[in-house]
Amino acid sequence: MSFHPRMYASVHGFQPLHRLRSLDLGQMAVDYWHVQCETQAGGRYVSMHPRFVLLLDGRKLSLARNRHDIPRPCAAAYIPAGLELWGQTNRPGPLRHLDIHLPLKRLKELTGHGIPLDRPVFLPDLEGLDALAQVLIGECRAPSRAPHHAAMLAQALILEMLHRSPPVAGPATNNGTA
Image (cartoon, rainbow, N blue to C red; front, top):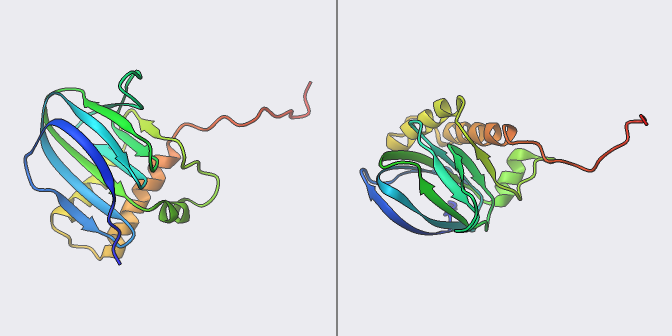
């Protein structure tokens, strides 16, 4: 049975330039969007499942946990399940982005232990992630690889994004020094 992400979004200022392109990878869905943004296009988003968002072509999205938070511009983000975010584009014009959705159970299987999955990750730039994203976009447009191969590419992108997240501060330890 295929995975179907459940997400609530209330958006304004976006007009699709092409139809949504998606990959059904069993326990993962990959969506490719190409839209036109008006000035200050944005919205409110919450998903019942974890998701990864990558903005392409040097674009950024300013994200905040509510309307009153100071937004953080980012080119890529990991958003935990159930976390409500407000987003706004940094400028009008075309916007391409790739979204990866998967159940938390599947994400835990991919990441193993030690990676916190309960806090968001906001990356200021793609730094090489765009190459993997472009391959996945090609698969969304015209699949040419086996679904398992495309799933492995999406998994590599997920793992690299989480690897680049800032470390979580742990409890202070005494290394035997005074």
